[in-house]
Length: 125
Image 1 (cartoon, helix red, strand yellow):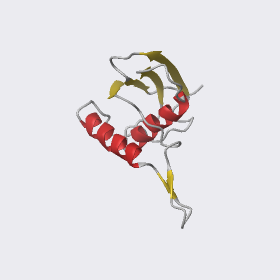
Image 2 (cartoon, rainbow, N blue to C red):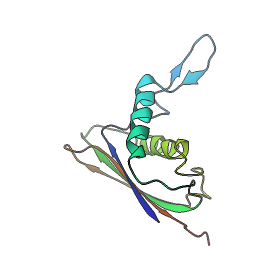
Image 3 (cartoon, helix red, strand yellow):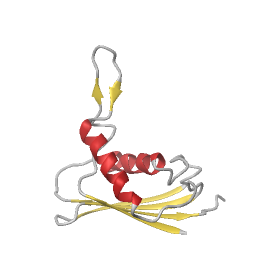
């Protein structure tokens, strides 16, 4: 089975936007990331989802950037992957579940965001 997920707009980095409480030293995702996570999760509810988390797959991610500014692709991918795990679409984002991941980026000023295509039942050699 193949699942295609569309994400619109800026995808914030979970890692680079953490807020640290100086008194305790604990860190939390920023409000901006938390708002994106909630909105993106709500948007995924209307898209086809597996009945149980996927345990083996190939993932193809196309990031669409709205500007030519510098942005870390892998941090955005980490945000997307964490969301897919949090929503029980993927069992985990480790290499045994996702042994093959393809990533590419392009400039799309009119439609920034991402397309994530998951092809399940990938077999490890």
